[in-house]
Image 1 (cartoon, helix red, strand yellow):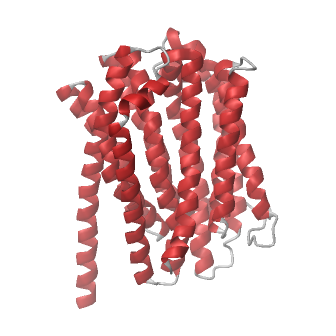
Image 2: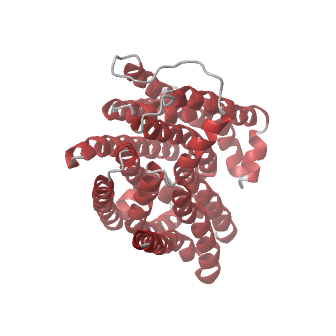
Image 3: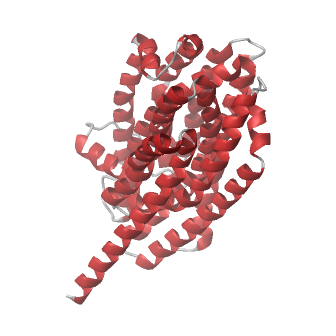
Length: 437
């Protein structure tokens, strides 16, 4: 297993994920320009829905693609069945989101904390996002299987080109066509369709070992896949849960402007998370292959090199954001709000150093999933993504106010890193004892 081969998988994934995150930033920029701070607040209130949709799609899609790689590497004959199974169950589950978008989007927004000032802005956006859920979710299956079937370049191109489409049509729909946030939602909703069409170049080629053959849907295969996709689920879901918890705390302590400031921070953080997820997803096909062949030396080298890559990215990200915080925030502060600037600049400088620790946690969770350790992967992902950050958000905000909200992310990542090191040491000790026996 050469380092060059690892780079061939990691680099396209980093570029693809960064491309995705930049179109989210572009979405935020256009919304800020068209609707001001209330538009950012509305967009931020919808982020938990994105999180749930993306999390469910990634759990089924990435988990199924990982199971496909593992079964293929050990010579199982049913490895190709996981593609159709993933498509079927993704569509089935996505219909729940479509129903919610059709029948009670207003209730969902009020539950998420929307008041009358942002409800009218957020309502059409939310309805469209929910109705396009099948495409958001299926895109994870199409890109993950394309990548794991030996075409990471096509998966990268699909993600990048769909992002470019989103940015271009964000502008076209929102400004020349004057569709406002409805236009932003439509551009975002259509972009995964573009991605899946590009992935079809792989599936229709002779290189593809995946055939779309209709089979009886298997709940067993779904559960096996979801077990390995749990880390991906938590990784995507964490941003939604974190956003929802932070929104409620900030609404209680400082109102809509603080939520808008967090909207800027949260969307910037998506770039960092996307880059690190790119490393974690890029290592998975090779780690699964090495695990299937019982090549422990290759496994360790893949983990080490992936962690080094992630930490380099994290350092560059943190330095860029800390030194250029004011310039970054000003891009999204179309109202020139001094209050929003004060909250966001101070908050982003406290929040982003957490990525120095998240780099290891995210990559390690992805590695554990790729090597069949779904339970350990889930513990790491659940700690950093949900349990620890929610706990620290409440504890620190009660102790030191809004400052505690911004510090909750780095505190949760440090806590998870310590837990991971303790669990890793325990596993090594058990392994050595077994060898001695």
